[in-house]
Amino acid sequence: MRTLNRSLRLMKKPTKMVLPRLHFLSFLIVGYPNASFANHDHLTSQLGLNVLLKDKFDNASVIHCRSRKCHRITRSVLAAELYALTHCSDFVRIMSQDMSIMLDRKEKIIIFTDFKSLIDTLTKLTTITEKRLLIGIAVIKEKTIRQVNYVM
Image (tube, rainbow, N blue to C red; front, side, top):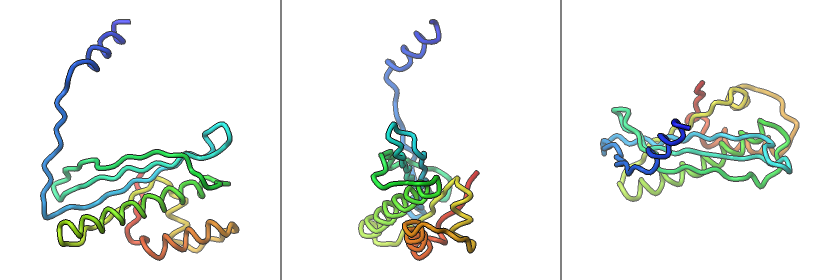
């Protein structure tokens, strides 16, 4: 009970939120997509993404977080992760284009994923039978294959 009361007091206490000062000339847009497969009652998946601005001194600031229900049918974990990666890639590319218009220079993009099977599918020759997945993988390979990294 004491722990609960202490945490409630801390939640009520006003805190000062400080955003780190980022180096203006060294922005990097970092995206991290994630998916959870069939976690709702009617077996639909949840897609999420985090987008950060990072500078060369490793200061980072979260600029967007989103978690939403996937409206497409996912028949596998690979499909859910691929849809999340596609959504994150599109969002980060739009952010990069908007920032390049505002700052008059092109911003770099990096996307991290923790799903090793997706990285293997993108980089190696693997056989996939679902046509929807083939189309999604072809799109990701075409536009962002060099920008997707694996993180444990």
